[in-house]
Amino acid sequence: MMTSDSQTTHEQPVLTPASRAEAARYALLRRLAPSMRHHLVVNLQPIGMVYEVMDRRLRAPQPNFAEVHEGAHKINGFARAALNSCLDVVTWLAPEDGAVSTVDEGVRECLSLLTTSLTFRGFAVRNEIAPTPGEVHRTAIRNVLTAAMIHLTDENPAPADLVLTLQVSAAAAVLELTVRPTESESGFPAEPSYRRIGASDLDALAGAESVQLAREGRQRLRLSIPWARARAA
Image (tube, rainbow, N blue to C red; front, side, top):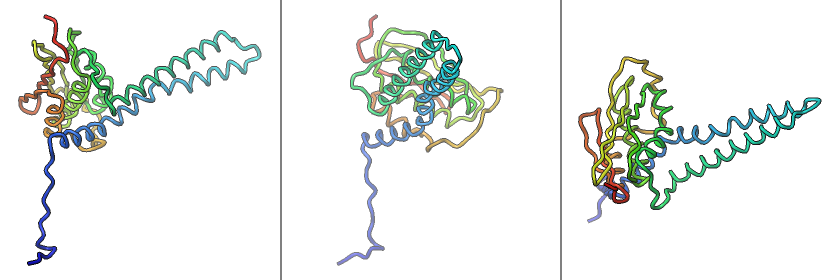
């Protein structure tokens, strides 16, 4: 007996953990895109200004070539920094296999990307993590920490402080993120550039990177990031 189209049922595809992680990673990169764009142009903008100064100096009746040489040196420095920024951003899209970083370096890298946008949204970041021996996988701290920061600030209203602290064990670096409401200015509320990073996204990314998550209400997260190498006692 044939079944009419109206009676046909469409089964929803079952997403595997890898598929969920891939979808969450895409959403994270879309949310990070404005910050990445700013990160890329910050070293390009001064090049035009230095060029204009050099051009005026070269048009002078008696150019000071020492100053012109200094300007050229500055342009070279900004260009190299811009190239390094471009290469670094590419590694967010295509991670390097086996790349590692210390926890404090990884945290600073994530904060350099997100702090400005969070400040505009009314969140002041308080990094209380000191340099600590031991290395973690770079993709783990990049993906899970940035997703956790965006998730917490999506779930909690501004103004607030976002406080980062660290505890260590033999097996993992335990990052704690806490949102604390404040009485400061609320920033510029705006809709996210892409959809919110939900709890399921964060779970998928953490699972893909072997990071253990622990939640305390809506305002606190703990990320247990395993050491990439055995940590010295």
